[in-house]
Image (cartoon, rainbow, N blue to C red; front, top):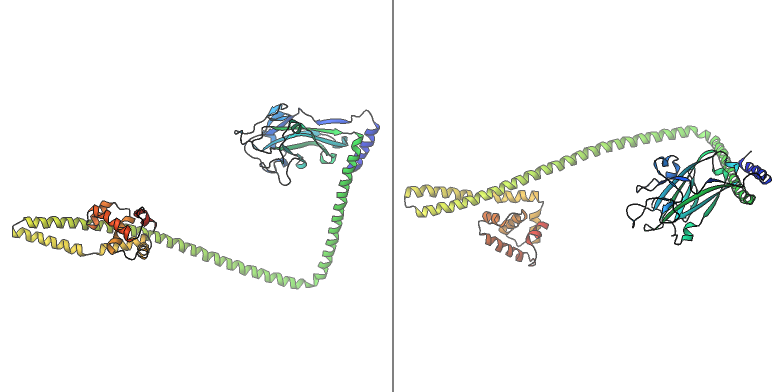
Length: 428
């Protein structure tokens, strides 16, 4: 006996037997539910997990906050101006014989929207948008008045949707706004044998039967297609050898492609290794250039020291009258001059500076072609963030002359008066 005739038989029995109760509350208002009100969202398919609520809190309906009818107050989070959009509820109940009733009435009070699931399948959606429901899905509209908040919304459910034994009903309540002042969840499930429910039941069963007919037609259509495919397969049997050849050609082609891919991968690996090695060598060269640049700067500082020493020796010669003493001092001055005339240190500094700051001198020369060699050196020192005193020592000039040189550089570069020369040279 299928489900429809079972229900019809039960209908005749119940209608002729006045001793059988017309309604039975399977889930009543005031029953205990498990609920989840944490800030951590649940997965979108949470309702398919029959044991997800084992660690949840417990409470008696109506559950929520902000309304006088609330029995169990739940949390909305730590920020009253940014409350949780979604709260979750679940209950497991025993139904030994789902067909003991003709139909089941699902009565719900919600604020603002609700989605109800039975045994992992959606059975009711009220004041909610279409599509996939997540923890951030807001209700379609706000329940403004107390009447709207406490109105009962009813959905009829067929006994076919239940299973004999333990059933799980789940619900998610969604707010329309994060600043909503209240939340409400209340649900009852009533099994009914009232005769006036029979037309509704027959209508629902008719729709289900129509759906079954459509599925049978679809199965028959698929069977016809399978028969046609079998017929085509028999007709194409004569081409079996050709297909084998084609498969062999495809296998050879795939093998060739795989071989080429393997070669390409090997080449790419070697190329990547070469690129990494080149980058490593470039970094090593830059490091050496930086070291050589520092050595060149030290050499320039040494030359400056020799210039100072030469000046002191010359002053000593002037103040010494003994010919034998001045002769030795003059020889030392001549040696110092020979050392100072050797100008490779400037070229080395320029070479290694340009290696570290790739093409800097060329870019600066193209921007300002009128700059002299001494002015280019001054710009290099500024780029190296050297202090005024250090530059003055190397160029063998007074620190005030360094400041004056910077003023002339700005004027020669046609820079505005409020332009910072250091920042300008750093950006080139």
